[in-house]
Each structure stands twice: as structure tokens, then as C-alpha cells.
Length: 184
Image 1 (tube, rainbow, N blue to C red):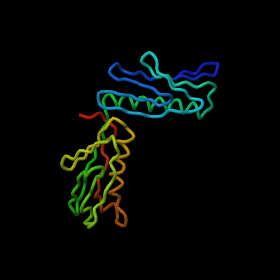
Image 2: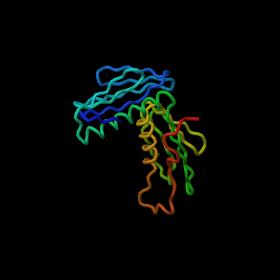
Image 3: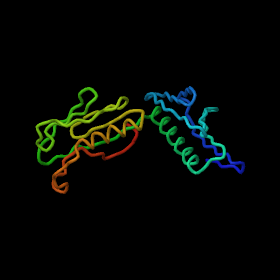
């Protein structure tokens, strides 16, 4: 991030050749081998542009909040490029000691049956753009949009939150064990 004496701040994010970028106003679409990610970057003072294989995030006479927003926009754009190029994966693990859980993906829902012996199944929404894969006791959430992948993993973890039991004894649940890694 560069700050000049004239009160202009500029940050750059490099885009590799295999990733294609289109802009319609403040809406940025990044398309790569692993998928497409779209996001709106509209703000009255912070401008996002694309030239010479780089995103330029600029602001004239920034205040503290605009300086922070330039860095935030740069981080979002880096995540979009990384997701479209390589994708993201969250690894989760199913843990139970009292009642064996049965998990499945049904449409856009992640369904957990027999959690702590409950009769009614628990479920969590799977956001569009995130894909859930079950391999034994491991659950993998993959996709090109980091926010949708991480929110889906959080929804699954939150669906197995234990209420009314001592968490030191009842450690059953589905927990995130590795965040935002590249898929293997």
C-alpha cells in the first residue's frame, strides 16, 4: 500500500494470466479454472480499477476508515483471485462417543441424524457455490468463493452445538480442523 504526500493511497493486487477479469461499474467478476466469483465494490471514495494485470484500489485524501477499506478491498480481491484460480477447502471432522451420528447432504441441506440420540434430525444450509463431500468421519467443504465456503462450514459446526450438557463430557459434534487450504 502506497501513501503519497498529496493524500493519495493506492494498493495493487496482481492477477495471473489464467484468470479473467470483467468489471461492470463497481461489480467485479473474476473467472478462473476453479470457478467464478462476483462481488460489488461500490463506495463513494474508494475506487477499484483493473489495468496491466493488476487491480488498483485507490482513494484520494483518505481518512482512517477509508485507509482500512482499501486494505480490506485488496484482501477480498486477493481471495477472489486465489479462489477462482485454485479454490478453497475447509476440512471438518465428525466426533461422537455416545451415539453414532449419520450425516448426509440432501439438496442444499446438510442433515445430521441421531445427534446425541435426538429423534429429530438437525440440518444446516449449504450455500450456493459451496460443495460438501463426506468421506467417512471427515467432511470437506470446497468452492471458489471463500465467504460461501467458510459460512457453510460454520453453519455445519453451529448445527451440532450442544446445549444443556456439560461440554467437557459430551464432546460430540462436527468441528472445523483446517481452514481455507488449497484443495488436494
